[in-house]
Length: 138
Length: 134
Figure 1: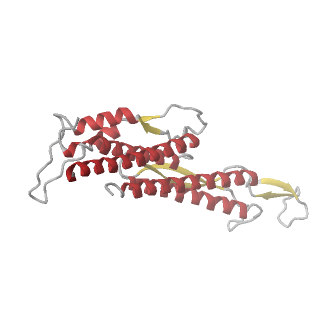
Figure 2: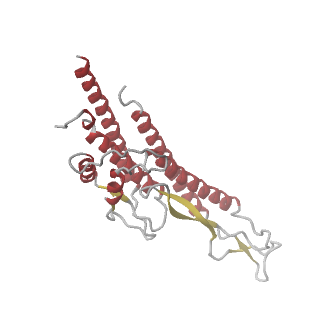
């Protein structure tokens, strides 16, 4: 169980981040459905979410950086690097002679799946916030 | 990577596909253009798509890097009465393959539509994200 209020939504926030990144990858695949030599890319959602969620909590979680001058740089979001590091190329299902391996039907299916999951996560976050409010106000 | 990048990616693809559609329109319009400004029959044009990095490294858009002339030879049609016929009675017609162009047109239209869909999808997701906590 999460320790503090701020950690309650950790997993969901990470999930949204990974879903967003995946949506971008799927959009890139569809955009390049006719580009010669383009190889479709994707991420393994559950494995990446596990990595990102772990990076956000526990002893290795990044501490918030205090900035006292406009020249100070704000720490980069740890999740972004993890996500771009776990991008993988899709296996050829039906290769074509121009070297492109985007399967438009599959990508569109995955796109629908991803956005449905994203919206489900958002609904879940809202429900969880309502739960927290109910506890606070009761 | 943010969801806003999806708009850039889908937008770049829509722009590229509409350029492709433009080229198809030119080819079909000039399928019978026997001469052009250089005196030669019209040459079919094709677009070259290239993937381009946009914003973060996970978003890859597409652009038309070049519009090239189809290197195929002109179609020789036997029309001895044509003012541009050569000594043997053949007229060099453009190397536009109308069937190919129609297929190209359908393909470009469908690709455009699926990118519109992608952008709409991202819009719905963003609108949903705005309801967090409501």
